[in-house]
Length: 419
Image: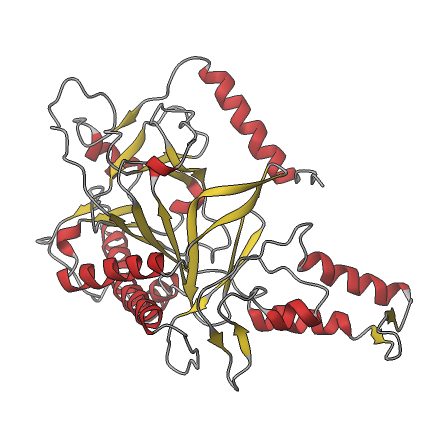
């Protein structure tokens, strides 16, 4: 059944249509590193976007992370998601898996994903495959590294802002000088920066463009095929950072930046696109992503700007680390709410039928509120090739079984998303 779009969705679609009407048959301008004003525009209009070139990341970490991507792909752990856009259910062109702190979830486009746990201290998660366990450990290691890098980038940004210096370092290579916490930062500053970089999940993505029969064209700038359309990342703690590690399985031979035959971005190379939300004056950016590059969206950049992922030729993985807002989205919270709703259920032992204990309006209203909080008109279930157990040995999911069998068999109010 088709769902009526929300007021927010209608407003967003109306803005998009107005923008496209203003453009008519013209493209908005955008810049790539070939353009003389590219870095100046980046510093002036996109100072909270930082790129760490691959050479600045430890080689051993590159090796481990890239092997971990391939391991999860080999074991069939990444799936295309069924999401809802403008009232329609669609499969994403990108395959994904969520890894992170046990019990955390991440919701986007009306689909809730549950984490495959990484082995944080105190976790009793068990995996059927040792290779998958090692891969989850590697992404926890990458998470720790990106947290440190994010705090460093936030320090650089804060130091420049306090000194009223416009030239914030936006593209950082291996020889860039680092600064530490100085006397200009008080204890609260340090705590705030750590909280904004306290990544609790990573959403892993994979796409092989030649195997996708149809990819949408970027509609505003003429940037070419998109793997992920323009968006703000959802379900994040306010002003928290996002860190992305990019791995193109093969880097195509680059075109010369001076090649007069090539206008705009090179379609063989993956790029991330950025624009100021609903702004038709400021040029957009198309930033090439090479094997092992990392980029960071700091402070309120995710709220004030939109980004998209522009498809290249080779297959590509990415690990996108986030501070997910989980206060009402953990597995424990969802189970507690479901169990509360089920307190009004009476089992008829003789015939197996179920009835309500109370028909009081206040009780029914409470049950309906919980139902609306954790139920979607369609349930999106996936199968996972690994197994993870909760403390005490209760199976959370097993090989070739539907995820969350406990919830599936005992709870009528649910919003699985997928595991």
